[in-house]
Image 1 (tube, rainbow, N blue to C red):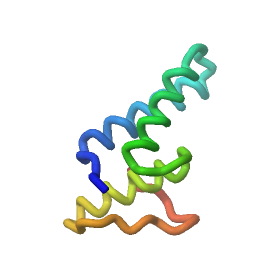
Image 2: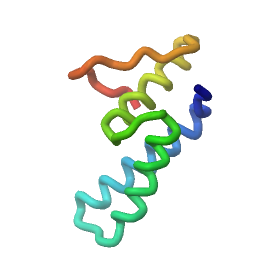
Image 3: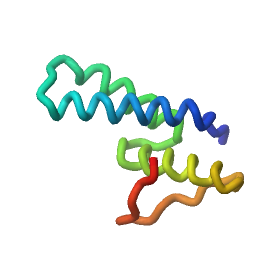
Image 4: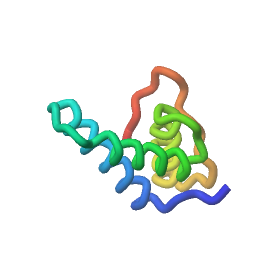
Length: 82
């Protein structure tokens, strides 16, 4: 599987976070943009749901920082570093 560039993952994670924050503040009309970012995160990480995509993106970024080729996914209950 091809892995996305770290900067691309960081950009997607930042967009996701920004949209979730705006949504929690009550801003309207964000659902379509949020759905697009979630879909793109899932495709980029090879996952099927947002929780798995966030965990996979975090693992990919962490493995790159450690110089490891293949990410080891965090176990349940582990905090995300992204």
